[in-house]
Image (cartoon, rainbow, N blue to C red; front, side, top):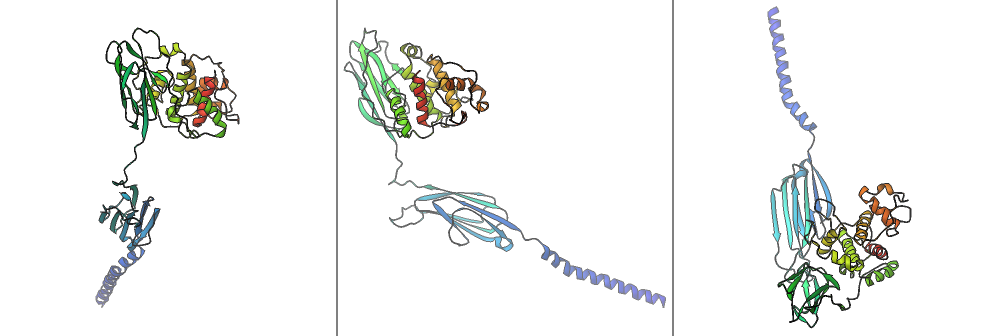
Length: 429
């Protein structure tokens, strides 16, 4: 009897265990599925101007927008990018690549008045499994009817009656190109001098020992120029006096306060030809200030100094700029660049850099300036060590003044007209 009861109890216990296991097989996976966290993915579209995009056939949009997709929303995401008429797009995708993609380019030009896009890019993601960014850049198409304009400059070449030059007269040269003028003196004459915009130049190549023939090359033209070839008698030991033709009228833009200063500077030939037709209220770059310094040197240096510095090495010391005036500024000791054989030509020059270049120019011109050990500027501690002597000298001489609030602002910038006004002050010394 006892064995029978034990057997029944064992059967009941095993039955309960199998029932629990069966129930767990049905219930547990369902509970886990219900508690699972839905996955999300983010799609960012950065679409610049001159185009737009549509997402899942929603209204068109542009700019930068991010979309978050959760669970089933991540499936079959349709993106189409359109370029406005006359533009084409360039697409960069970071993250997941689309499962389908088709780019269409329309080669014909839309009819006038019809805003038909010339380019679109259609892509589909079956399931967006990771964060993805689509960046679009649009560029304007250039058609046969719309070719890029090339800026030109007028070059005028003249000579006296004692020789011949080629080419002679006036002609246009594309910006950045070079022009070479060949010359030959008549019998009994030789080359006396070559003038570029009224200033003597030394970069002349003679093709014989008598100095009767040769050529002069103006490299990388960036402005209008006048080149004058002067011939003198073969037995002449003096440099001829040349009266250059009047320079073109200046067409610069300047602030009202600066107009008298600019007129004074232009009369003294302190304004480089590149700036005589520019907006002088804009910031002055390092290259432009180097040109102003070279113009100041040419205007103020006496004949002895010019003779001393006539045969300077014309090799360009910098790797990031190729400009004859910048090279001259280096050879004259006005600038040393920013290090590592670089000049940083397009950056705005700082006030302490201006002071340093002018201080060196004053030394080249042998102008004596009263040195002051200290200045009274409240921000003198912000002046770089290498510029301290220059700032003290320039401010002490009244060439570069403070900002009116007791500061010098050594890392601040200056406008072109301010730089030219400062050049006026040094020219007056």
